[in-house]
Image (cartoon, rainbow over all chains, first blue to last red; front, side, top):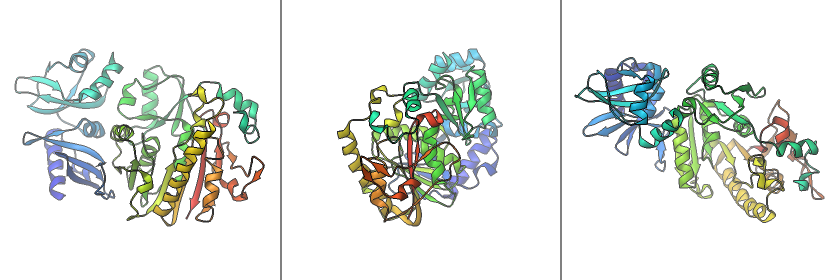
Length: 145
Length: 290
């Protein structure tokens, strides 16, 4: 469990500059190709479908932060943040098309109206694409339109 | 609802109220946002609101806030303020091992999670796959880290571990939702009430088996029917001591007479809230100490 905690702490420290202390009093476990985070006293029943929140997904040997954890982190994210203006939100979220951006390749926190709404992926071609799931995007599209 | 004329006080007020639309209430989710943040978001969306004086976590709105970013982000939960009463009676503490037996879609689970400020350990159980999907979605959206979800028929929940506190918000005929479901204006069908009361009794029986000695069980419904409320509770008076929750808002005691039958005086310690009392839905709460 300590390895998982270190993995999570290190990833978010390096990519998003999240302070280590955020992860205090949290337990981590692996399930369904992901690392999950729960409060310290949650006792991981064998029959539970899920405990806490999915935090990182394993994808192609790397890890991807979930939209939910980025929303929880919000102001604690200090690096790799893309603040979307109206036009950019329209293209990225409503049309699900890439926009130009300049970050190091990897995952980026998307911010709209001052709040982190989810995850984007910066490619080597200076393109930023949304990584917010289709279902959650559909809900957001109904709000933004 | 004429059949309840003798047990509902200010019956004319009640009748008038149940014909009106239910207000849009929200509960501030302190895991994600402060009341001030939510108020700012509502102002931005030009949604008018007023405080629910009897519960500072709730606001009454003049329109549906579901299509807002604040809602999408889990800064608040759309929840009738009357349905926020059972978790208040439960009084969860961080050291409690808590079971929400019929949890989906999660209004009370997420409320308990927030009351505990993400500490402690809550098991949220439900039997229905679709409703579990909604429960999980709400837990993630609201940022609840102290909750795990199980999918079981609560009647068969394993007794290997016992709980300090149990919330049984039982399936019921839902008469308390009449302001949103006008087909209930004449009350629920009697055969539905009979059928569901059998299930309620079995669930409460299981709750007692799952509860530690000295633990707390909250039995709640959102219906007016004594058959689903006091008549269920009365069957368990020897298994647990009823405690009257200390509520400062307008409410009624449990009834001690129904259809010419005299019921146990202890049932006065139950709580009934009617739509015209809090301008919300109807709720029934019984608090047992095992």
